[in-house]
Amino acid sequence: QVQVVESGGGLAQAGGSLKLSCSASGFRGGDVAMGWFRQAPGNERERVACTSWSGRDIYYANSVRGRFTLSRDNTKNELYLQMNSLESSDTAMYYCAALQGKYTEYDMCRLPLRQRVGFWGQGTQVTVSS
Image (cartoon, rainbow, N blue to C red):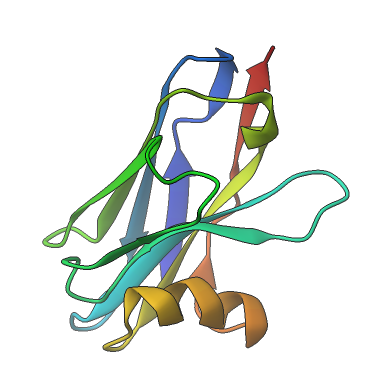
């Protein structure tokens, strides 16, 4: 049974930092693409950053590029999001998703939203106070 679990959310001041972690377990075999998404109240869920199945290729949304850094431990299917220079607009529920198959970082950031495929965690709240 596949499980995706996020941790590390919380409250931060504008300009501060937080680090999110995600662990995906239960996959049979490798080739797992992973990514972070977020949803603010009243908004649709949007992509934040994603890795390809190999972990070598990363996509960042324009809104976070240069401030957020995605990293991954492929041996454990663990994904991390270091968030620096936080802004109030970063306030949202952050979700981790995982998709098995040789997907690019672009497909990983697109398919779970459009085709409702993949496995999702329950989310972790990030609140940035100004």
